[in-house]
Image 1 (cartoon, rainbow, N blue to C red):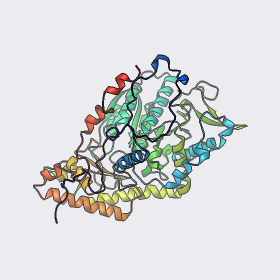
Image 2 (image 1 turned 90 degrees about the vertical axis):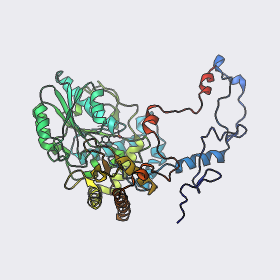
Image 3 (image 1 turned 120 degrees about the vertical axis):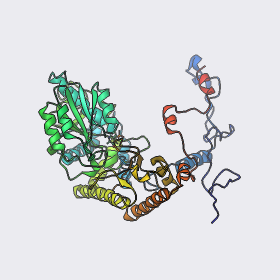
Image 4 (image 1 turned 30 degrees about the horizontal axis):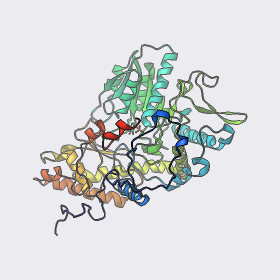
Length: 509
Ligand SMILES: *Cc1c(COP(=O)(O)O)cnc(C)c1O
C-alpha cells in the first residue's frame, strides 16, 4: 500500500482537515459580520481617552467567522468524538438530558440578584442536590459553593483551620499528605498556611499506616487521603487511619474526586471522614476538561459543619432563604465566603438531573460498571503491559514502564503513538510513585466493543515496541496529527496570548 502520510498538498490542507490560520491572518479589513451605523460623536463620553488608532480586530464576514471557529473546534479531541481514557479525570459520556435541563429558560435565565421570592424553585433544586449529596455520603452538611475539586479541598481545609482556631489549637501547623496525592492536596494545605509533610506508600500502592500513625502528634492539624487513591486502589485501612487521626486530635480530609468508583456503596461517615469534596463534573457528569465550569461541593461532619462557608440555604416559615453573611445569627462561626454568588448553578442542575435519572440503584450500578471496565482493561492489557500492583483495582488501572525496558521507547513515546491510532492517551507519569506511569480510566460509559478495540490497539503497540528497533518510530509519533509534539511546559509557563505586540501600546492613547 502506498504511504500517503507524509504527502505534501498544494493548499496545505489534508483531506478535509484544514490548515487553519490565526483569525488575524484571515483578516480582510473590508469585511464585517455586523452592520451597525457609525457611532455618533455627540455620544462620546470618553473625553481624552477616546481611541485614535484602529482597534486591531480582524475584519471577517459571518461565514468566515463560523468556519474558522467550527474548524478549530474540530481539532479539539473530546469525549463526544472518541474514547478518552485519561486517568484521574473521569471523562465519561455526559447525557444530553442534563444539558437540556440546564438550558431550560426557568433555570438558565435566572440571575443571582433576583429577589428570593422569585427563585424559590432554584433554591429547591439546590436543596434537593444537597440532600442527595448528604444521603450519598452519610455526612450531615454540605457546602455547595466551591467551584472545583481543588476549591472544595480549600473549603474543607479552611473549615478545619477554623475549627482548630475556635478550639484554641494554634500549635497544629502540619498537614500530612501521602506521596501519591494529587498535586492540589499539598497546594491547598500550603495555601492555608500549613507545612506539608509527605507520608510514604506501603509497597501495595496504599498509605503506610504505620508511618502515618507514627507521625501523628499535637502539631498535626489534618491528614488528607485520596480514596480510592490515585493508584486506583481503595484505601482499605481508611477507618483505622481516621480513628488514629481523631485520637491525635486532628481531622480526616478525604479527597473524593474518585467518588465515581464508590458512589452508592460506601458510607463515608462510617469511614470517619470529616470533610470531603465531590467533583460534580467527574462523578455526576458535566462536560469538563476545557477549564470548566465544574463544581466541588464539600460535605462536612458534625464537628466541621458550624464553620461551613456562606452562602447556604436554610428553611424558614416563608420558604428557603440564603444565609449570605458570616457572623450573622445563622452563621456565627462560618469561616466566610469562597466565591461570588451561590456556586455553579448550571452544574448543580446537570448533577441533579443525572442523579434523578439514574436513581440510587443506577448510581450504584454506574460505580460497579466503572470498576468492572477498569479491571477489564487491567486484565487484558496485562498480557503485554506491566500493572503496577497486584489484585483488583477500582475505577482506573495503573501500569508502569517496565514492559518498555530495553526497547528505547519511553512512556511518552508510547502514549503519543496511541494518537495516530485514534485514541486519546491515558494519563502519563502520574501518580509519581511508580516509574513511567500510564493511568487509564475507562469509566462506565464505554462499551465492551470500544474497550476491546482499545486493548487490541494498545497490545499491538506494545508488541511492536518490544519487537526491537522501533525506538525512532515511536519517538516521532504522532505522525498523523496537524501538529506533532508541542512544548506543553513552555506553552503553560510562557503563553503567547497576543499574536502581534503593537496594538496594546496604542490601546488607550
Ligand atoms: C481531579 C482531581 C482533583 C482536582 O479537581 P478539579 O476539579 O480539577 O480542581 C483533586 N484530586 C483528585 C484525586 C482528582 O482526580
